[in-house]
Image 1: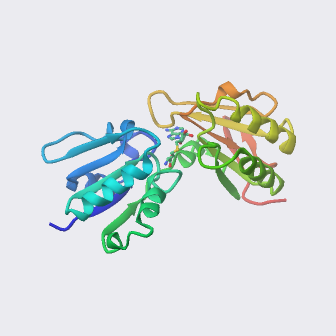
Image 2 (image 1 turned 135 degrees about the vertical axis):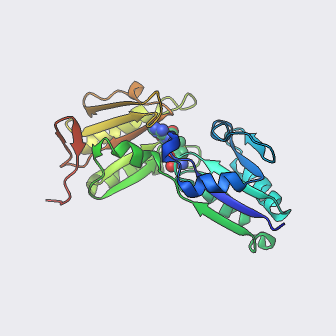
Length: 243
Ligand code: SAH
């Protein structure tokens, strides 16, 4: 049997947002690897071994998956959303660097609907140029995050923020809001989209002046509009042209 490694995105939560090619890859898999809550979304069946692992062990998980594929298994690594957005695809290629014996493996990335796009379906807040920033300071210093926030605001990008707030760094998001209020002014619209496409889904749009750190948690993706982003009825949209 020749092995393979598929790095798949499960989408934001709703089964209807799992792509057919990801469903087909899971049906063929001998092994599914990933962070515990993502592996829990895969139904157990005969012939399939599930390998849930803890957060923050991405490199160990990537190497274990590559080793299983090299041994002939059909391995699927699952991420939520899209596997290329702050997720496992980069970790797998990082693990392959310098390991030329793995370069001949059948490794494929199957995209998924990322949280930002599922959240943006609350209208069209990302309808013009935008950027996407991970607010976690696990893998980069706060100074880099602050510089990127200021540059993005200065360029008048709409912005989407992943990992806005966690118990281990309760103050980062408060600092990010201060930077954004300073750079964008108090009237800029900000969307808090929590657990999008799940039964716990909650969406809230306020101004930066009204925004508080508690409006976000680790299940929230946050979108800040550009200077032209506005409300139309119950929706929020960003015009397609810059003035
Ligand atoms: N690869 C994932 C992102 C992983 S980082 C993707 O493409 O969506 C984890 C962060 O994603 C969370 O802290 C949160 O900011 C965001 N996120 C993931 N699923 C979400 C959902 N259903 N609703 C809102 N935000 C979500």
